[in-house]
View (spheres, rainbow, N blue to C red):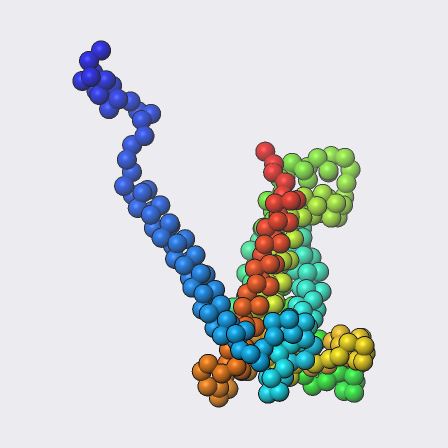
Length: 322
């Protein structure tokens, strides 16, 4: 067979891969978008690291004291980040205690009980909470949630600025995130599992809680971790409602539950300190100014760790169905 005949047969082969300029252009565009996303992340990390390095290179700063110190007083050149981490963690835990039960219950209802008509109405209404500016949530915490807690528990118990109010409102803020991601995970469970359970005589509630939820556990866990990352990075609510002073403490002297872990006392979060300090009258390249980048870098690695934990959890418990 001659070379010309081989070329003719190859050209007429319908299974031969053909050039698709439009598809190649789309692939190139998607690659560029992904590259830009990675470049932006690297740029953020570079700027945070560069400015944070100036902070840690200062002779007045000790890296060991920074990560283990329990007092944060920049005016006295005392930089222990644990009080700020404590405020952030307390607010995030309270937010998850509020958001996970409500969000998961809403997701189960929308996935297993609601009709399509009800779902088409309630799901957009629930997700409207995402579009509300966080500063509105902050004023809601300050003018409604805090007075409500003070009226229930007494003004002597609940301070005007307190962690509980900020945590509850942050929890309300992340409810749509938990419910939306969890509902997607529950809806992805094959209907054959439900039908098999019904065939064995299981009730609707048993199918929902003992079949569907365990099957979607990896997706639900990922939703919780993503919501926690969102709570850790929340700014305006904690700035307005939780207080503008770090909760400095001394282990062994201050009461653990009476002061250190008391949710009704004020505590400044990491993001709150960054906002208050960055909006003040600080000169560039001062130790106070550079400290916000060190805190920002610490916060970056905290959220990175949470996201990595989420990916490992999903990979460990992910179930594939045919």
